[in-house]
Picture 1 (cartoon, rainbow, N blue to C red):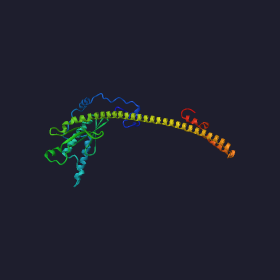
Picture 2 (cartoon, helix red, strand yellow):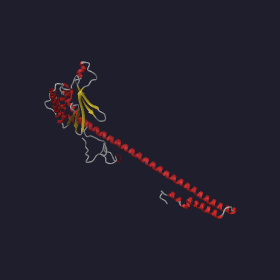
Picture 3 (cartoon, helix red, strand yellow):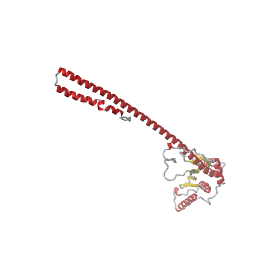
Picture 4 (cartoon, one colour):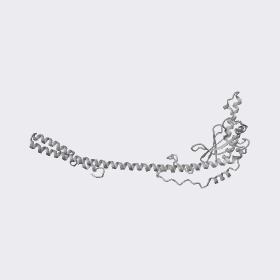
Length: 321
């Protein structure tokens, strides 16, 4: 059973117990168990004792009793009808199906005495399970199926044999343990071991789930840390790029201002040259020359980064100016 209690609200993720970012928190130590599975199995064997399969269904578990009552209703309905359809016929009249019920009944009664909760859904006793603490153990009890039609007496006999399987439903369905009829032994002879292994497998599956959960947390934490590292590196790269772009922009501005200053100086020299030349040549009225000179000098002052104070703008963003 889980040794963790969550009070109120939902967990932050599927394997939660952490509030906030898993990457920022320390993981608990790896799971450990005081009692090994061998000791658990000894304790369960002592608890279960000896289980037998009675030859009758005189004492039945409520789930088995329900199936028998439903079968009796089918039988009564079949007797009342002249032509009963196949699905209206009793399901457990054959020797094999009655045997299945007797074996399941023995398992159910024995597991209840040990504090477990058997479960069964559907009306054919095919979907079976045992609740061991907080863990659900799935199992099957059915005839051994052979492909094709039985071609011999041996094949026909094997068609009446049963197989019991404990099933894992984690990820993909797989058989954890199996017993079946053979020429030497029948499933009934293994019934005590079956009950014991069903209960022990509940503990095994629980431990596997705890280990899986812890490994998931370790893997997920590593993934989150790696993601945070990559994000930090990307932020640092973008910051370096931003700084370089700002530095380049300031240098470009500086070069543009130097070029603008040279243009302003050239314009002023040009104006002086025009004034000097026009005074000696005297081809244009002085008023026209001065009007043009005033306009030209005004433009020179406008593009001059020193007079306009634009050279100080390059210091902004650096804590100066």
